[in-house]
Length: 191
Image (cartoon, rainbow, N blue to C red):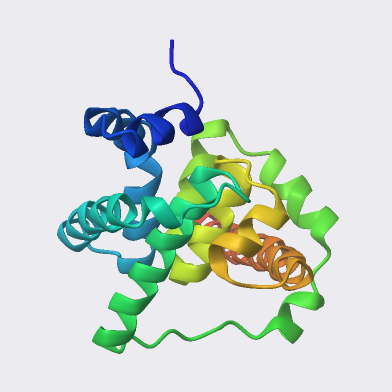
């Protein structure tokens, strides 16, 4: 049975360095996922994930325990990934949020709910691939890893209210994109 992260952190701090491998095993998938969502390149994400665990190990004495270890670790991963993308100077284009505001979310949800699960999943996967790295990480942390808005604000260095606003806009953006895909599919069927 796995103990809490703090249990293993204390072991590492007491020179039982092998305990760190348990922390790596426990969090490697999410660290890699954050890196991949930001970098969008598997090899770069693997390399960055390794670097993150090395950096976290070297900085473990600075971990105060004010937040969860996972929050602290994911913040290191996110910041490292963002830094790497800045070095590559990747530009992202945002969608026009005024356009999104004009769509009825209830109508879109109804259309989506009519689809089979496999079709819904394909649409969601396609939409997630088109999100910016920041948006993708935020969605992953909130919906898939069930982090709170407070934890996300720590990880992504934003205010909690900014996280809430961005999540609200993201939900609308995702629904807008879903609507666009549904309309495109319907046009193809009837032509």
